[in-house]
Image (cartoon, helix red, strand yellow):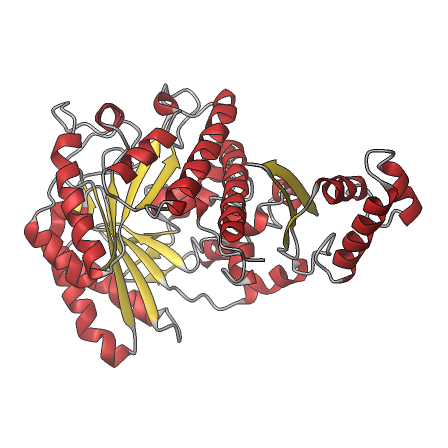
Length: 460
């Protein structure tokens, strides 16, 4: 499968199955378009398909280049990975990451919160040290030979249970050497309880910190008020700025992570607002909400949102050339290496490699399935007691989703989010269409940015 598009003055051709990307001139671009329906079209027919649009010698040269790419497997290549998914179900389950719901409670009342202000279809609760300790032991026991293990302290708001966070990190560090493991801890926070002690601890122990901020003041305060209805922007932004300054000075990761909704379709301005505040590691996600929610993204919003990604991409190129660039998570793409084929086919690993743990120790495929009884896998005392659910997630990949078969972005998004598929279609083996449209646009922009910066640097 070949995908062609024009962006910011570039003619870009992506050969889906080989991963090859080509910047081409107009004649090659049009010629590849003529071959898309039938790559085996005879040379004479290919040349004739372009008519008098280009000189004969230019067409002949272009045809030679196109045929050379075909012969080298960089254009109209075959899908050689379909058979790789057949043994997924037979693989031994190795858990490499846990999302610890350290607090099913929150001090904000975000309108779009899928966790129902931290309750997750249940009751408010804080994880005890004993439950968290069992969760870390479970992770070590089921991680096979994997050395690096990921643990994300999540909520609700994790800092409402900060003492247990600190104790669990200490416990994890105490067992690393004997178990031949290394824990990489992450914490996601809304910033309300962020203070000097928290910053110091996170700078010492957290490999990454995710800071929730939705954008400009009016945008953030509308969607992320406190329980008394007041906005939280003025409270958290100065803290985030100081925290980001410290993390950058130490060479440590952080992310400003926002959510855009129907209320701020001009979300590129919110991302640029983050950059203007001094943040340089940024993410902005589209809200996923029931179609009847007033803030939900609608199909009619997609053209506007795609244009916003174009605006953001062009501005990122400009700022990078000026020496004040920043990272945008959804435009991060590795064209020379990237995830292995297994990850490209199977995605995030929810339900197999990645699990969520509730405050009372129940195990779910990921944080977005928490509270849904049909996906309760087991608990930290008994382990996984529903291997049939795990097997279902093992077989969830780009080939189990019909919509992915004709999508050029399938090896970049790996089929999308299983929870979104389930919430909109009742099965994990479908796709969330709005998310797919936006992901395809993000992939196009990411490739264009790579092309523009490579040309600016004189690279091939």
